[in-house]
Amino acid sequence: MTVVVTPDFDTYRWESIARVTGELPMVRVHWADGVQLDCFSLWLYENTVAIDPITRESTVDPFDLPGPGVLAGARIGSDGALVVAWIDGTESSVHPGWLRSIADTEHLPEAVSGAPTVWTATMEEPPTFDGSVVLHNDSVLEAWLTALVTHGLARLRNTSANSEAMEMIGRRIGPIRGSNFGDVFTVQAIFDQADSLANTGANLGQHADLPTRETPPGFQFLHCVENTVAGGASRMTDGLAVVERLRAEHSDHYEALTTLEWVFVNRAKDGDHRWIGPMIDHGTVHSPLTMRAFYPVRLAPHMAPVDVPRAYAAMRVFSAVAHDPELMLSNRFEAGDLVGFDNRRILHGRDAYDPGIGRRVLRGCYIDRDDVLSRLRVLRRNRATAA
Image (cartoon, rainbow, N blue to C red; front, top):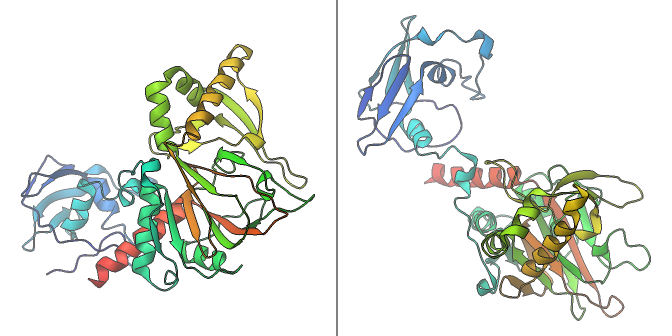
């Protein structure tokens, strides 16, 4: 079969084209099962003639592109590829499997994660995988990350219970995103020196970290080094389930939570991050849900005074739903457990504990959503190439 270079590094099935129609400068590609794709001449040019074979990136600035009439014709090659003819007499072959992937929307960012699995307390335990092999076993890493992006929550067990394991596993996924807490941080009660409520033994209500940022971290990872305290159970609630409940049963409060804005500020001696947004931020059609819910850093309402009472009423209902036992998981961290969760979707909290009796030491880090999804795509690409 003809070797046809694609404008990327993925591997594609060979999906032979059945028919080519259309009126130039548009070409319509048809497959035998009825799927079709309209291809504009300049888009085909950018992804064939203009592609650098080493970087697989386009080399032509839009100002320097030829006119739409650069395409002289199109036909099906003997191998089932799309062959396009240019007005200078040259031809280019376009991989039919690559074209089919575009037609099937496999190129979209959300294709790697698929539809989310919305869960409640009936799940009982997070999806769990063998952490003892994750540093060298791509299959386990892929399975863990797949569960992480679909459920928003996934756990490793039996990782090394030492202070270095979090960073090693984090960098196995991708670049660690720093914050005012550092790249890899410690969550531990520190008497008289706590830099956040997390570093106390106090109860932590259901929340999402760093709503003080324009773009809060996509995923958070917490690794248990030691846990000998009574109490301190970790609590997780799926924000998608919370949104479903609020929309269905508390529509007025849901409207307030998605439209009325607050100013969020981290209260630190050596940092001052601020952002404005609603508690439930749906963003644009292509951006993920962002829960901006963390009362220790919510500073002031950014709304008309008449709206403030209903904003507080809506927050009370939000908290009640987020803490509903029917929606919430509660699990104790054991040494060697590593839990990853979607920081913009999953609301997490912690039961209170007495830091004077025993020790509870977690190591944590943030990794942007883009980097988690990139790693998962590459893992799947490598598996497909090896098959």
